[in-house]
Length: 113
Image 1 (cartoon, one colour):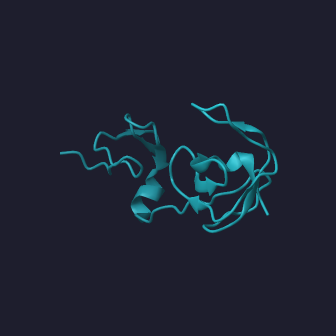
Image 2 (cartoon, one colour):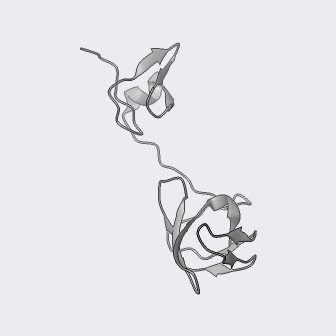
């Protein structure tokens, strides 16, 4: 039986030790032995394009024209997005944009108002 901790991101049991780090071969996440020993999950801080901390319910503006996949539409610069919801996925923000509907955005393309 392995005494190594499971991966904190994908919960894979197939972790291995590489020097002073633990490595997950399934998601390529690396973490230190001290982080594994503390057992406390790390809280993720979401920041906009200029470094402001974002929270659920904030209002942001789009800083770049964003082309929509599968559509000919474009979300224009300066579009206000109200009441955002932060999620832990590849796109950090779930929101509804007037005229477009529900969509996901990355924090690097928005600025807090």
